[in-house]
Amino acid sequence: MNSPPGKTISGLGCRVGQLDAGQTENAEYQGTEPDQSLYPTATRLVPPSSSSKHSLHGRMEGGCIYRVLKPRLLEESIWSTFDFWSYFFTRSSNIRLTVKSFSLQKRAFSIHEYRSASLFEQNGIPVPKGFVADSPSKALEAASSLDGPVVVKAQVLAGGRGKGHFKNGFKGGVHVANSPKEAEELASKMIGQKLVTKQTGEEGKICNSVFVVKKENIKHEFYFAVLMDRSTDGPAVIASASGGMDIEGVAAKDPSAIIKIPININVGLSTEVATELSKKLGFEAALVPQAADTMVKLYDLFIKTDATQVEINPLVSTTDGRVLCADAKLNFDDNASFRHPELEGLIDYSQIEPLELEAKKSNMSLVKLDGTIGCIVNGAGLAMATMDIIKLEGGSPANFLDLGGGASEQTIFDAFRIITSEPGISAICVNIFGGIVRCDMVAHGIIRAYEKLNLKIPIVVRLQGTNVDLANEMLDKSSVMVYPANDLATAASRVVKLSNEYLKSH
Image (cartoon, rainbow, N blue to C red; front, side, top):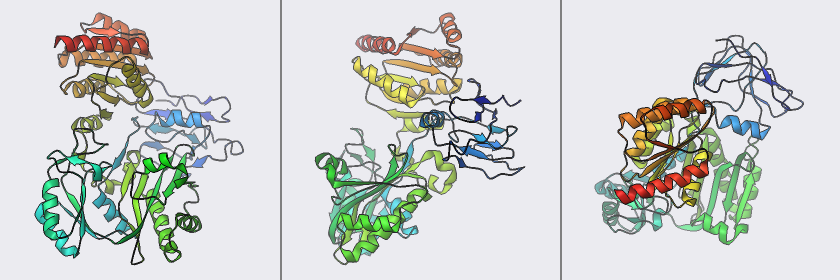
């Protein structure tokens, strides 16, 4: 296909490509280099070459691609839509970029503590010695090899393990064992059981293994984390001298106990800044170099792995003069997973809700909730607003589901199939703002799902945007029993009413 003509956006100072709202693949762009005097933050992403081809998420023939970090509104609107860069700028108006596909923004994924510890060791970050055990007998063996008291930690991807409880009645997911036999007994009460914490919900998460680590003689506990900070659009270091406890509680009780340092991503966390932070936290003078070195290495790992969060709680000093990461929580950006195939093997899919995993395979983002009203929405913000208004009307959402910008008729069908596979669904609210996702395509998916899945529950549909009139006409002429709504408030009140009626009659 021919490249569309460039289009000037007011105030941007450059030409950008256009995209047909219904185009989902082989979309081509043209543009000129941004005015560097107006946009000094423009970053060259691809080196100039007359024959360079990059097929990672798209293809460019010649020239350079630029990403302009400002204006923020433009950046955020494009980031939320495209699978690749926030915007495209090229040195020549004849350059073409082919975007092969669109997908929704993916969520961060986490790995178990024992895998985090292994990753730390590989990068020279000090951690207590430990072994993972997937059976009580292996826990016994691990504790025996560590010679002395150990800590047995349930490996579940959720916070609050120490204060949680297992479905079998056993209290706590973190315990000290003074002998190998005690470690074996503790492991027998954890492995194969579901641990319930404040983050898992009442259903809990399965514990398939425990991490048996040497119990260190801790002198002081600190908190240290590197995470992405939306207020500065970059990484930030969060630290506190009050480690080993719920950091949110510390922040609520005493905000002054939390130290926050925005980090210039082009400079990184310097040894000088880390040294000053270590002193401010209260590390002994002899341990400041160790603490600073550990902090710098943690930040470097954060950048190296495209992490969204590296949290150490606690970061400890020991009585024998060492600094250790006694616990670790790592989250990674799923959007950057193509750069880190080695991390794919670290994911424990047993920790992911089956429905969420099924949705992920269909390129959707789903979070299971406790309600009865299914929600099918495109866009995370719109999905959250939909759930909020349903709740305001007295209903209870059964899920958060974001179809994403690249939804197809099959995606719509899969969304209905996944949601209705759960018992207890009393109604479904479809709320679509059609831009790249055309409303007529959504209507096709609804009709197909209704007929193929033999749906009996009420469906409220609110469509706005591209081809909405055609979509409404298609639904009117079909045999599908749907309840239309022209606005979100009407859709929410209607779906709550229909849900209540359905529950009373079934």
